[in-house]
Structure formats: structure tokens, C-alpha cells
Amino acid sequence: MRSFRQVFLSSLYHRLWLFILLIVFCAGADAGERAGGSLDVTVRTRLTSEPISVSGVYVALIPRDQPPSRTAVEAVVDGGVKWHDVPPGRYSLVAVAPSFDPSFRRIDIVAGKSLQVSMELQLRVELTGKVVDVSGRPVAGATVCHPLVVMPALLGRMSNLARQKALEYLRTTTDDHGSWKLAVSAGKASSLLIEAPGYGPAWVTSDPAKRELLPVTLRKGSSLRVVTNRPAPEFVLTLIPSASIDTSIPLELQKQVWAREATTTVVESRH
Image 1 (tube, rainbow, N blue to C red):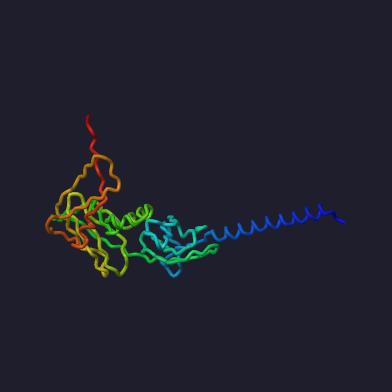
Image 2: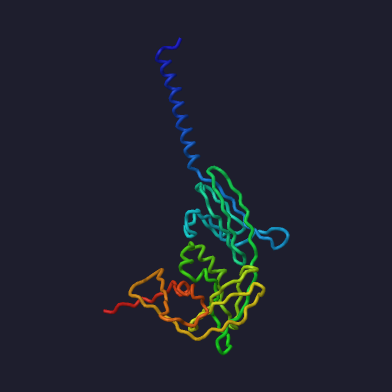
């Protein structure tokens, strides 16, 4: 027959184990509540009847209550990406790659769950053109770009990685013959801004039915050099005409187009 001491110790031992198991169970349940979900993204296109993976694609997961610059996670990948421990919530999933139209999806991430998403990108068409001066001579080194990568208000809504990728496929320069080519959305009119040092800018809109623009003529203009007394990163300079001017840039967009992130020159102090 067991003594009172043995019975008491045995009861205490079992209660201790039950207490430990209860702590472990509660901690595991709490961790499960805090744990994120998994997201497996595949990015493909259909150049033929069979889908193929897309390389060099920018993929970003953006909380729906945040601007595009505040990504939860982002990466440049080949074919797709898998993310773990993504905080539960409602997101916008974005996939962008050179020569393709962007793709967007709205998704919900659930704690402890795995979500598989396949995104299919549509191929863009190649638009070509030529830039010349008033004498018909080719203008080399002119910039041809989508307004998205011109206006600071739009650039500021991108993360640094998204901006870097956008500049790769939404902007190009003319060669020694003044010729250029740029991928644009098929079946849609595309607005482009064309600029070159020493020339006035030109705003052109493509014809969706044509793959080549008529030669764009740039007229002589001026350049502006900005000097500051200290370094000024993210310096935005806005030009506001004091009177109406002759330009092809739409009136409602002039203030946005002429607001630029400017590279400044610092004046060295002399003693």
C-alpha cells in the first residue's frame, strides 16, 4: 500500500505534466494563429499552343490598403516564385516582364494555408519609329519613353525595384540613325514622350493599327542646369510657363510632365 507521500508526489507529477502539455498546446495554437500562409506563383505566356515560363519577371505582393511602393514582398524571378510565412490579409499580386503587358490578381492569404496562383502574360507588339530635326537629320540619343517613367508623381508610387524594371522596358533611346523600337500593348493607342538634349520635347500617340510611327521632328530648345548649395537627392523641379507655349504635350499633362527628378550640381564653397 502506497504512503500518503507517494500518492501526493504521484498526483503532483501528473498535474505537472498536464500543466506542461496545456502550455505547449496553447503556445502551438497561438503560433498557428500568428503564422502566415504560403504563396506559390507561376508566370507563363502562350507564344504557342503550350504555355511556357517567362524569365526576368518582376513579381510583387502589395497589401490592398497600401500604395504600390509599399510591397509586402517582391522579387525578379524566372518562371515563378514561392513565398512562405506571408502575413494573412488581402493583397494585389502583380507580375511584370519586358515585352509583356502587366498582369494583376487580387488574392487573400490565409494563415496556415498554401495558395497556388498561375499568371499568364500577354505579349506586346514592337512599335518602331525615327526621330529627326527640322532639317530632316537623325537625332541620335533621343529618349523615347512611356509617361509612367517620366512623372515623379507616378514614379514615386513604385518601389525601387519596380522602378528599375519599369525603366528597362518602358524607355529606349534612338541609335545613330535616329531609329528606335519599343514594346507597346497590342490593339491600344500608346502615348510616348520623346526628348533630346537641346531640343523641345514631343508628345506622340500611336495608331493601334500600325506598327510604325511617322518620323517625329524635334525643334531646337534649351537645357537647364540646376545648381544647389548642398546635395539634394529626390530633388523635383517643376517648370510652369508664364504664358501659353507651342508644344505637343497635352495641356492637362504639362505640369506633370515638366515636374522632374532633377540631377543637381553642388557649388563648392571657396574660402
